[in-house]
Image 1 (cartoon, rainbow, N blue to C red):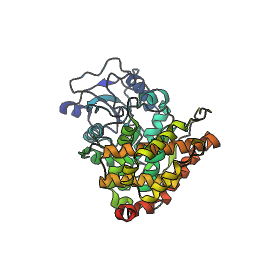
Image 2 (cartoon, rainbow, N blue to C red):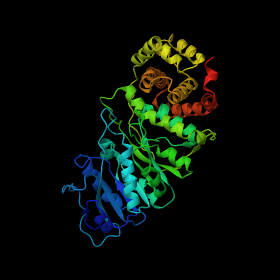
Image 3 (cartoon, rainbow, N blue to C red):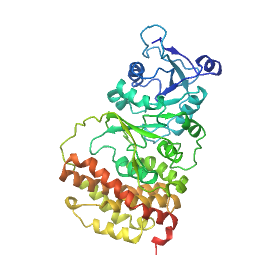
Image 4 (cartoon, rainbow, N blue to C red):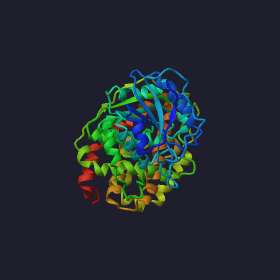
Amino acid sequence: MAGLEALQESKAESTEIGHADLLMAIPVPLGSEALAPTIAKLLRACKLLSTPCRIVLALPGENSQATPAELPQASPEPASERPLRYVNYPLPAALPGTIPWLPNAATYREIARLATKLDARACTVLGTDSGFTRDSLTPDKLTLLVDPGIEGSFDLVLPLYTTQAFDDLVNKSILYPLTRTLYGHRVQNPLGTEFQMSSKLFPVLSAYALRDSSQQQGRLPWLATIAANRNLKICQVQLGARRPSSSDGIELSDALAQLTGPLFLDMEDNAAFWQRIRGSHDAPIFGAASASAETTDTVDVRPMVEAFHLGERNLREIWSLILPPVTLLELKKLSRLSPDEFQMPDTLWARIVYDFALAHRLRNINRTHLFGALTPLYLGWVASYAVEINRSGIAAAQQRIEQLARAYESEKPYLLSRWRWPDRFHP
């Protein structure tokens, strides 16, 4: 492979670069400690690709900012069939109080525009979770992520991580089952930050309009739903074990707002589409799943059950603006259960999420207060899930999430009725 050339993006140098078969983007600042080891893995992965291609590596930075000399360089070889070059693109500043690993929508727009300018066939993005990138994203995993798009078989390649039973519970309890039910694709990580997209998605991201909503705050568009709405081909690749992403310093209600709020907004935009979807189907999976070193310790559910009880006592008036009387009655019954007996039915939780999605649309209450009201209910679901896993063992965790997703699907007629006739359920 030829040596890497550090090039800055400009009109003249874009001509020098020419076109790229593949744009690879790493949306972390140039000073990040994750950058050099990730690029070193990219260099090794490029040699493993089944199809020779011209690759440009996009790093965030100003046009005048020099690419650091300490970044890995390829060993000198004869003229390579897979040259790799550096190019810069602007990285928007992170908004205060946001989840650090959740990318900004403006970042993805800049990447899509650069990919369009280079006439790339596909673009691979490696997320901002440096712990995952350094420890698990090996060259062979990178190849697995890149190949489906380069071969032209799929328009969106999303990650499938191996996680422990109590990791990523917002995704497992809301994002995955809700996205699956709405759009019919069983994509387990619809908000995965490692992915590959074909050129068919570039125009959509390039023109993606920011909302004024405080819940959106320029966050990442939902690529899985964009692809589903356009009938594009989606697959998943096994990227191995993943440690929990850090959200230190972020309140749970704020995390729920930042992760779930954009999906609720997406529901509003695409209601005409998802109301026609019935059932779901598997998205193809490539690669072998990795074993996860699970802890055998049980989870203490008492603090979560106490938070639920506190919410039931103090938030009844707010919940009555969001939830129908029959749901409020079921929550009242749950509040009488001891921690060891606490069990929230899957159908009840699915309906709660649907009701909050509708309240988000109708703006029954301030959206900040909305997610504050959802927080003790979410903790109640987590407590119920933990009670069951403590009893049945961690081996049942995946089956438990699949059972929950099926409950979401079975309750979709309830969502459709609530969405079309919201007043019917509040006599």
